[in-house]
Picture 1 (cartoon, rainbow, N blue to C red):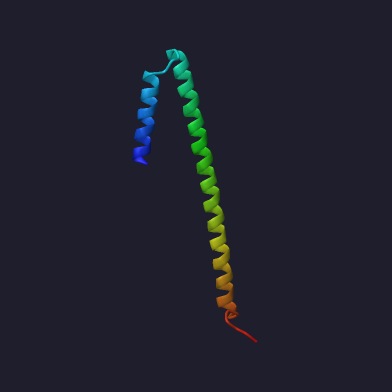
Picture 2: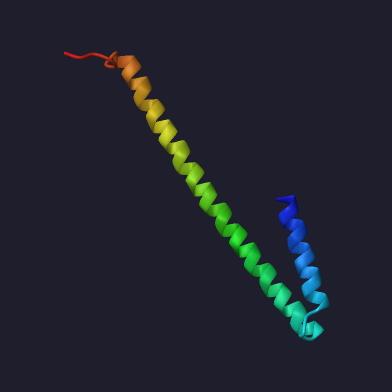
Length: 79
């Protein structure tokens, strides 16, 4: 991850130095890209959070079923 961020920073820096656009256009472009990156990060965070919540709910459901089976003694009973 550190290498990726270093490469990202280096790429942005070189892009600013060699950009054919004016300073104002470059700043606007960088602002838009930063906004897009932030939005993408928020979406990824929300997706991960939802996935974890679903996993926790599945674990709770499975644990509840197992506890019920232990309480009632139905596990492994074959009649």
